[in-house]
Structure formats: structure tokens, C-alpha cells
Length: 113
Length: 112
Image (cartoon, rainbow over all chains, first blue to last red):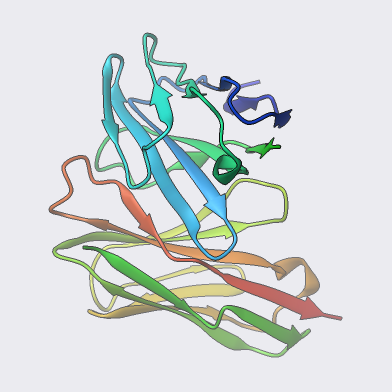
């Protein structure tokens, strides 16, 4: 099915472990984004990408790494997970910089013990 | 720094009881104001984009309006299925790649 998918949907890990969250979109959108959503903070931008091999930091990038070797994929890696990274993570994509509709994936609920 | 404030944080309505949600913003060079709906356990779903003061958009029981400082999401005769969290976001002209800044949302509960 076309759209934006995230995997896994749920993940439990331990402090210090490396975790990678996957995001895949089938629309060939140029822009892709990673957000985290926490109670009291709303949606906060972690990293974004304007195209393959072009990435930039958002509001809360510390502790996260991204890559984008292919247009359709935008994985987010937590190099050494901490409890403060327990959150719901959303991936989103948009056709172009001035295109108004930004599509969100279903989210990944990550728990770091 | 772009700021978006939504009020109230939570709103409980009876079915058929109309009301409005508020989104006030402080940005330099507004390029667009967006409304999203988010159901529990799901990603936000796009509703509207507003570009300039005075603009209005409608979709079923929802109507979004925009002034130079705030936006309202009017809900007319709501139904229980309108229960969700409504998010407001702004896109500012001085951002390098025009990312969105989101408010914290208003959680709406419509009782039968």
C-alpha cells in the first residue's frame, strides 16, 4: 500500500543500547522529518531532510543520528538510548518546501528502561 | 523564535454544543498556519492550511479562520466522532527549510 510506514510500532529497550527506528514513504516526497511527542511538550522536531544525503538538525537533535541514502527511507538511530528518550516518535514527509500538506506515519512508541 | 500557543488545553462539550479552539502565534513572516487532527495512538492528520489574515476554510463541522495574531477552529454542532486532539502549527518565512512549529494541542471530548 502507498503511504508512510514506520517500524517497529512498539519497542522496549535498555539504557545504553543502540536503537534504529525505520521510516519508509512511497510518494517520492523530497522532505522527510522525525518528531518526538511527549506530554507537556507537543510535537518537537528532531531532524529533517530535504533530499537524499541532505539532513539538518531540528529543535532536539542531541542523542540522535539520521541518514538518508535513498529518497524513500529515513532511519532514526539512538546511538546509546537514555530514559529521557522514552517517547512516541513520528515520521512525516512533504512533497516540497512550500507544499502545505505534511503526512505523518502511525508512530513508534519507544520505551527505554 | 517562533511560538505557538493553543488554548484551552482540554475542552469537553456536549453533542451539538458549538465552540472554538484558539491558536495564537508569534512568528517572523508567516508562510502558513496549519491545523491537524490527532486520534489516540495515531499520527496527526492534515485538516487545513491558512495563508493570510481574513482567510477561512471549512470542512464538514469545522471552520478555520486566521487573523494576524491567531487562528480559531470553530466546531459547529459537534458529534462524538469529533473527539480528538487538534494541533496547530506555523510555517515561518525565515526558516531555512520552512519546518513547522507545533503548539501543544487542544484535547476535545464530545459527549453524547
